[in-house]
Structures are given as structure tokens and as C-alpha cells.
Amino acid sequence: MANNIISCLHCKNKSSCFEKLSDEELQFMNNHRVEIKFKKGEIICKQGSMASNIMYLKNGLAKLYFEKNKQKNLILRIISTGSMFALPSISNNILYYSAMSYEDSHVCMIDIDVFKNVMNNNAKFASEVVDIINENTIQGYERMYCLTQNHLSGRMANILLCLSENIYKNDAFELQLSRRDIAELTNMSVESVTRILRGFKDENLIELNGKHLKIMSRENLAKICEVG
Image (tube, rainbow, N blue to C red):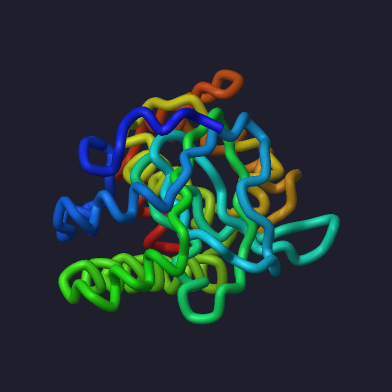
């Protein structure tokens, strides 16, 4: 567990919704939260368990995934620094998905009852939280469309562009995801992932050297997404 050196009042990485809180409310949150460091590969939370906290990825990289069976999961989202999760638990205190860190990460865990209390007493904060939930829902709809309507190449192109734009914010990045992770994210086999990445590389759409990936033709990847 990390020492709570920086309070919510002075944290530079806090979510935009916390900008709607007064200093007293921020201090109230701070008094009822802990900051925990998770090593690469550690489970942050477990699907089906009782949720006692709302979680905020202060820094790091993690995946949210639905556990289907022991052989294969479905990755719902990849989240990076500044992401809040476990928000669906507000309604009934049940975790609907699991989370695992892709790299050493710090997670702030805020007591769920305290979080609800502040929402009930601060309409602007509650509105911002609802906006975050809605945004996550829309992203979920877009992913569902991609998984059900796009062919394998379209799914892969979509994921690479999403990782570049939303997670790494760069055309060149070190891909932390394993081939199996990509398979679970795109709902395809590991063999298909390997074959399509090799094809993209041969067509000069990407450069791929170990975990180092660089998008060489964003325009052509976008066309593959559109065609599906």
C-alpha cells in the first residue's frame, strides 16, 4: 500500500468530476480513501464480489474484463491514467467485471458510501459522474458494433487505432498487451491475431518489432475499419 502523501486537495491527476467538489468535500473523500500500488499482472478487483469502493487509476495501465470461462475472457476496456471504474457498482454494490494491471499502477479506492453521499449532496458532481458513465456506455456500444459487424481485419484495425488515440496517444508505442489479450479484446483466436498483425506489417500498415509497434498508415487502417 502506498503512503497517502498527496491528498485529493492537491492531486494533479484527479478526474474532472472532482473539480466540482469544494475543498471540504475533497477532504471528506480523502479521509475515506486509500491508495494502493498494484504490480504488473496483479488483480485489482474481481467480478462478482461485493464492491466497497469506487476506483480511480491514478497512474498506470489496466484492463477491465468479463470472465466467461477459464479458457477465454472478454476484455471490455483498456484503461489508462485518469480512468474511474467500478461505477456500475453504485446501484447495487456488485462488481460486474474484473480488473488487472498491465504495468505497475496506483489505484485510489474511495469508500462507495462516501462517494454516494457526496453525489447526493452535490448535483454538479453527480452530473459529471453520470456523464462518465454515459461516455463509457457509448464506448461499449461502439465496441459491440465493431465486434458484431466488422470482419477480423476491421476489428484489428479498430483496436490499433483506439490504442494509439485513446491510450498511448502516439502512433508509436510499446504494446503491453499479449497476443492473447488482443484476441480477447477483438473476440478472435490468438492465431488470427498473429496472422492479421503479420499481414498488416507486410502491407506496411504498421511496423512491429517485438512489443514496439508503430502505425505507418493511419488513413488505410481507418479505411479497413470503415469497410469492416
